[in-house]
Length: 390
Image 1 (cartoon, one colour):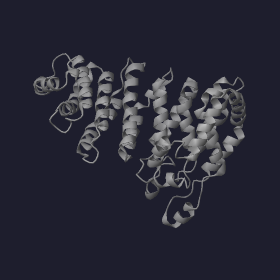
Image 2 (cartoon, helix red, strand yellow):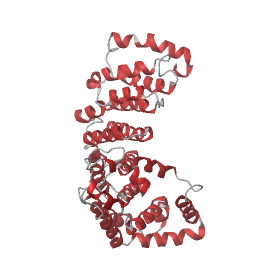
Image 3 (cartoon, one colour):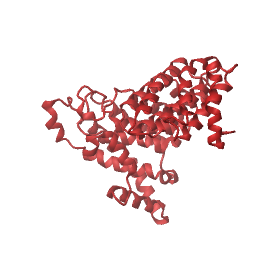
Image 4 (cartoon, helix red, strand yellow):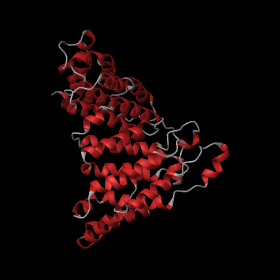
């Protein structure tokens, strides 16, 4: 919990990288999974896990205990008091139980006595409602259960019915749309994000991505929130310090837009508000990534190209002209093999994909500037790498 409190973003990624050779908790999880896969252990663990998750009162009690740790803020007068506050033991216990349930969903699926819907209705969703409905002040202890319940959405996306998904979407919107986060949430007294620190928000992004990868008829309800969701995701991306965090968030933006193109009941098109929200920050993201000499990784720029291509497929032919002023400079820079992108042919491939998408949606070659692009960049690219000829 100290590592989480010191830097929620770093803690999130450290949790993702844990392994049994270096961490006792990860080793215990590996042992649990080995038992869950064994013929003798499977039935026993399934029965006990179903029994534990049937304790709705215990789950609600733990949620209430965590919610009660919200204090009156982290002013200088209360800093010492808050430093002494630890995570509630009930929250830690249910965090462990939920972790075991999430990594062994197949056990619950094989247990005929376990009802996923009843668990969601009686325990998970009410507990999350309690956790999200606490004080507006920042939590004195890390929001352990809040993050773990959102993580369970990722594990259980394929088991959550459309009506329950709509409640999940509402919760994700609340978490992601809370105030912007800072590098160190505890150092910013003015940052009142209702307890949703960077670790919680990145976990919410994981859950959102899981739902988008497995859409059902409820997805239109999620896509109807796309404009504010996209704005919230960009806010999170700008607030994060690590490239890995930013690429995860920007990938969610791209997936949200591409899902809109394929699933919207409005004919596969996103509305102007969502399109504008998706396009507006891209030039700034591109320029910031290009200026970062300490991190030449092209992933952020590749994400910009991916988002632009998704938008081009979602806005319709009559709106493509609005994308061209943003798309042209990034395509031109990506295909400049002698420039700063010259060592990153992966950018050239994505740029060519975006260029082709724009061409296929246009009635003409889009003007003199675009007409010279092939002679200036395309010929050199083909001469360098025949993989791009097709």
